[in-house]
Image (cartoon, rainbow, N blue to C red; front, side, top):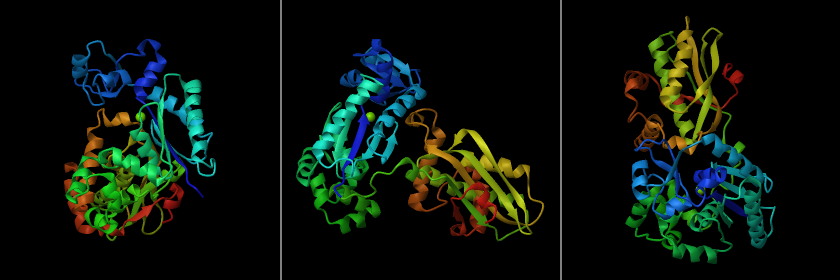
Length: 413
Ligand SMILES: [Mg+2]
């Protein structure tokens, strides 16, 4: 069946929502900030602010220098989230295969719901109209329609604000590939561009025509993704929220040394938390519930779950919470298995987090990257130094078991 994928991206989203809420802010340069101190930065600027060079990342002091009368507001995530809910609810009228990609972007798989690109174009106009009518007349979006998820996003990324672009054939795809810089394509940042240049690939057409085997040699699996995207070949398609988010993420480990030695248990738990944390972060998720415990060699054990008010994301947070639970009920007899899992998973609260006091999150992500590239245990948090060394010595790490089970099932492992 002919595939139709639509990507929709709200324009200057947070700023537009603020201008929607207060008509006095409209037609004026406005910036939504992480916080309002001089070094706080703008996380979304209105289209009027963009015109005078005030972009995402500009700090408050610089923005005031560029335009002293700029309206600066502190962000209100709840406001943006509730607007997003209204928009996504409209989108869900058109397909049950809807992928919320970020707070202001979504993919819709319209396959089977429309038969031609002309119908798709009509539908885009209808959706845009409904958003202005039912959510707010100041809210505009860009839309891209094509036959793969990558091309749909590529199309909406390269078209102007409040417009749409349909790539309905390889011919129209190649025409656009010819017109834009490689870095405008989704997934090709400065870094990848530099590496592609080393292979003498300087534009999307050259990428498309490059032998896939050579790309894979240079990039590994991502080399195939780059090539497939540029050739209009679908990789993953639209994934609904349920498909993206697992119920829980966790690991368990049957211990070779069964004495109830607390330092040893701590070391293993840390290892399990690290694995769990890394999977959580790879999936861009955070968790609001933790479940951990141990089973005993001669039956019984201790398991407890706990709701966490501040969502879990870093290995350190997961470990601290898990250790608190276990250390309050230390085993008195030989142990058999230790398990940890996190659940009540959701996407990282909002993009705002990336800009606010998020040192820990950023560090976690950086550590993950290094460990992924150079192998586990290349770097880790200093607090875990001693533990890490113990765990490293004693555990065959591949032996840990992924668990994606409901809480009560873990007990019987
Ligand atoms: Mg946007």
